[in-house]
Image 1: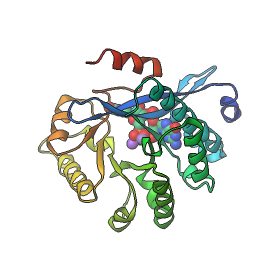
Image 2: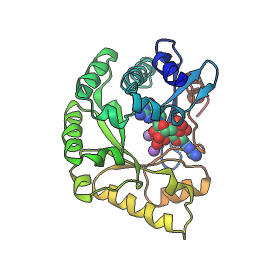
Image 3: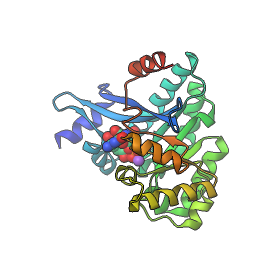
Image 4: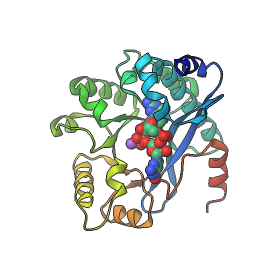
Length: 254
Ligand code: G
Ligand code: G
Ligand code: MN
Ligand code: NA
């Protein structure tokens, strides 16, 4: 209960932070964009990862205001990077199920883009496969509206939910992210290799960019590239970093 109280106050107390994890062109290209990942600097418990408080935030509804804060802060950071010359970077923001169902979502996204002067196509909204498929018709409608604004949609944690291929085909997404559970155990002869190559083939058929998340080894990097995966994300190539470290990273990478 204390945690719940603290969570309602976290934003006004300036305890929320965003880290940014890079996505790279496969196999070893430059960073093409970043995913904003939320952290909570709790005064007593220290730095908390989303798993420690997002379920509570969803249950109590505070996720709505936290989610708006995330969207706004990520766009603010992107506009700062754009002003510094990094105009080809995209920014990905994770949406929770409850945010996705908010009637004000489209307006909130639009006003955020305007406020920070961000070209819509540089913003990617990540929704999990499970969220997208819980009400497929509504998801098609929402993603169609977002796409009309020019914003990109990404289907996160793909492979863990139950997609109807018919709806997947109708969803105006531009990206699939292969869940890191499949990437984790990737070996050339294993079962996960078959699943991963099927997902990549599916993404190609549907004309979607395909991102592998959780890439931790050079073997995974090489194998995913061989299978035709265009984008890689994971600790091997870049951990979630604070903005200062990112500026440092790009200045010291040829
Ligand atoms: O950053 P980390 O690997 O601990 O993230 C754990 C989970 O929390 C991931 O599934 C990620 O998508 C989710 N997550 C991270 N940041 C946000 C956020 O700002 N909003 C939502 N809804 N989920 C997030
Ligand atoms: O579900 P989503 O893709 O939003 O999850 C992002 C989460 O995955 C973040 O919390 C991030 O810390 C974590 N993550 C990113 N790269 C790796 C990785 O290479 N290995 C593991 N185990 N976790 C990762
Ligand atoms: Mn994500
Ligand atoms: Na994911």
